[in-house]
Length: 125
Image 1 (cartoon, rainbow, N blue to C red):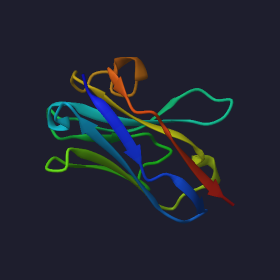
Image 2 (cartoon, helix red, strand yellow):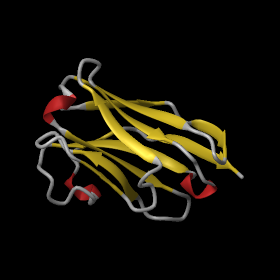
Image 3 (cartoon, one colour):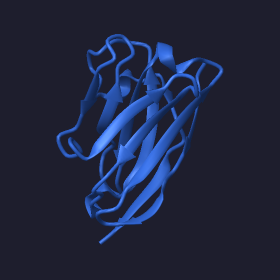
């Protein structure tokens, strides 16, 4: 069982930056692939980014590529999502999630076994 604790959300102006953290307890995150998803009001949950443990690869949604960066600190058992050049359309509840599988289906939320509680990110225009 992996428990995920999120932090770092909040309110920021358009063009600003935030860094989200996803810390794990009971298991080491270095043995899991970790992804970030988001859900805006009235919309479905969508894939944002993922860090694959098996090949140390990262993948991003086109909407955040070149603005967001996912990274790991294995010593801290934490995965981060650095979000730069934020836009109003980035406003959503952000979730981190962990999966024990490989790269296949990394963008599909059903392939993730453990989820954080979510954290609000609001970008004002």
